[in-house]
Length: 340
Ligand SMILES: NC(=O)c1ccc[n+]([C@@H]2O[C@H](COP(=O)([O-])OP(=O)(O)OC[C@H]3O[C@@H](n4cnc5c(N)ncnc54)[C@H](OP(=O)(O)O)[C@@H]3O)[C@@H](O)[C@H]2O)c1
Image (cartoon, rainbow, N blue to C red; front, side):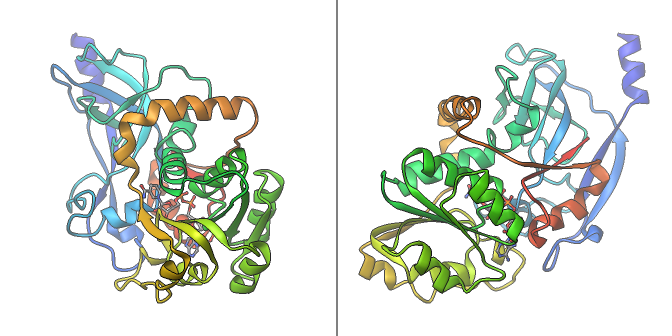
């Protein structure tokens, strides 16, 4: 007991703290790297050593004041974020020491949790980092957003924006598994090649170089049945011009708008009327009770080689501010995370 306490006193915890609300893109000055004492745990709590920290576009919204589907992170608090790691101490019967776990542990090396909202990883068949990506929150977003909200049918056309990211590439591959024609947008030739050659997309449009409207029409001559939107803004507007009758537009995200103080709204929304379609939104946390079913099915698809993923790992918690910017500059190629 004495030894454990002594080790705890010697060991420190590194944290990324939000010190200022960003204007526009978050900058390194909005954060501070703090070194604090290791936390102690009480009855009913666990101590997790994070091995990977997830970088997600939603983090930008969490830095704003006010509440959306979650309250904004308080100034002076540890930045909110998902982590995947190992339980290194436990005073909770349901969470044994040595188990692997994911949860909203914050951007820090060690986190104390009471287990609420966490997911224990039953078997480590895949790399741990997959549980922040394709088998974690973004993968669940793709699965439930496409299947529950988009309701794709075999033979239909699914179009996904931001397609080379973890959500987009997973949406496209699941749509292929369901027998759809799949088209996506991405911001480089290399990303477009990856979508076609590795992920099995039927076509990919480099939105930075091609005429978007003409390319969408050429790739989807009968219109789009499911538009899964990760980008928003003018791209959403352009897409609305090419909907098939009965189209479903799933608003998953709008990364093109997250750094703006005024959001671009769709001008072409009347196209929903002529298409007799609908626009709907998804918040992945609404499906938390169904995650195990999706993880099981997706793990099977991964094992069968039907579902692939790409990861982009940056070393070191101190690189969090720069790594976060990569998402908004299109510099990540695959699921972005920090290894710590
Ligand atoms: N609703 C939910 O519950 C939920 C949950 C998770 C994620 N999401 C949303 O899903 C989307 C994708 O997330 P992810 O984790 O898979 O991220 P990601 O796609 O891996 O990374 C972000 C990518 O977005 C693209 N991008 C950045 N700025 C852009 C712009 N102005 N215009 C067009 N593309 C831009 C970049 O790719 P390019 O090189 O192609 O530009 C960048 O690499 C985000 O909108 C996120 O907020 C929603």
